[in-house]
Image (cartoon, rainbow, N blue to C red; front, top):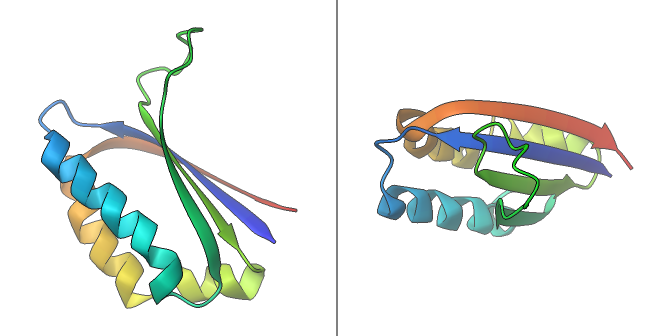
Length: 98
């Protein structure tokens, strides 16, 4: 399996409605894209204050490399990016194999 971790910093202008829409789109991905096992959405609540402005995380699990390769160019991923990019300030993407 492959884990796909996103750490997200939204623009100050991003509304809670826009962020909720994005969350919903992410959570629907496993039902729409073969090879995506699961998606978790989380809001930072660490008391350590070391998140450097990153407020949200998305944790995805792919079946394997072919699952990831299916997801990256997939039309559902492209549609998600159309909602994501206008409200995104910065992102860290980190993948690793399990």
